[in-house]
Image (cartoon, rainbow, N blue to C red; front, side, top):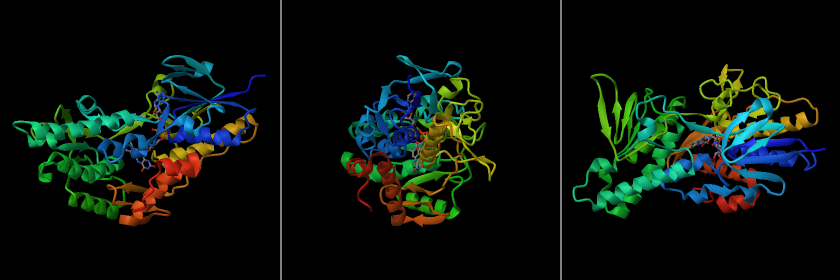
Length: 404
Ligand code: FAD
């Protein structure tokens, strides 16, 4: 008799950890495990702002999947998922198709421009290794072009970042670090380079504690980041943002434009006929898609409800990794005819980097953390993930080892 086949789609935080846990919880005789991913490498999405700014080499933020997932135990397929045919338990890939008995959809996020005119076409976005690498190279090209042009324009050096949420703030923090280095390299006066972070909400980092927001703003402003709060972008042109509407508009020009203002779940979800709310599927407490006995949806593809607050938990790597534990447990439960468990979120806090030497956030029951302790905590969080994935060896190979 053939073994049940578990197919995991996407090798990000959710998919990698689910696969790892399934390998630990199930014997090889119990089930066949298949992991499908676009590339043969896994990247830490939470490090992409560093790759985009050029403060971390892309190879430090990614690893070959077969180095951490044993290919003799898990069937690794490198291909793009196009659609899930849930009525006949099939997944259509770009170059082939596969069947499944149990499916885990962990395909992560895509950029959401909220329909802002020209944003999709004219702005870069930080979505994966290649898109991040393109931003780094584009910024450096602007510096190189400026230093060799006959009539250089200062506005070509400006970097406009749309959105001052977690990703936008972490990205401008890295830029504040990288720009002085590029200025030295291309012999350009630092005062000529503007880093402008534009946010539609009345203040940056919506949802964050006010003290942390003020700390982050001061830290970044001291290093030359300009903030435009309550500034609604109505259009993104080839080299500018248009702020405001009607007669009351302002244009801010820049050589580099990056949109970090919104994400949504993978478009594979809607293509596959799942019921979508704001780009994601609202899953049941056991992380299965509604009315689907054998399909789990986790990570940034899922809304997991916080019953106490009546709203979904925010999509984070921390949550995706915890989804993976519940998801792997519940697949084991289904295989062994045991009861399934409900997902319970254990909020360990959130720390945002503000460049390499500063950070801020909350840890354990909303304790506020600033400066060097926050920098160290951020590294502990990053290294903990590597430890869970590949033990001390992976920390030594890919970890952030200098503590401050
Ligand atoms: P991902 O980790 O994004 O993985 C999705 C995987 O699916 C990728 O490997 C991708 O290549 C693959 N894939 C996608 N589409 C297809 C397809 N069609 N076919 C095949 N493969 C596909 N969260 C935190 O908790 N802390 C932080 O400090 C933090 N910082 C962040 C910084 C940045 C710059 C960004 C962008 C996000 C940050 N987040 C942070 C959010 C966090 O990264 C996400 O919540 C997390 O990555 C979600 O995990 P996931 O497994 O759902 O998706």
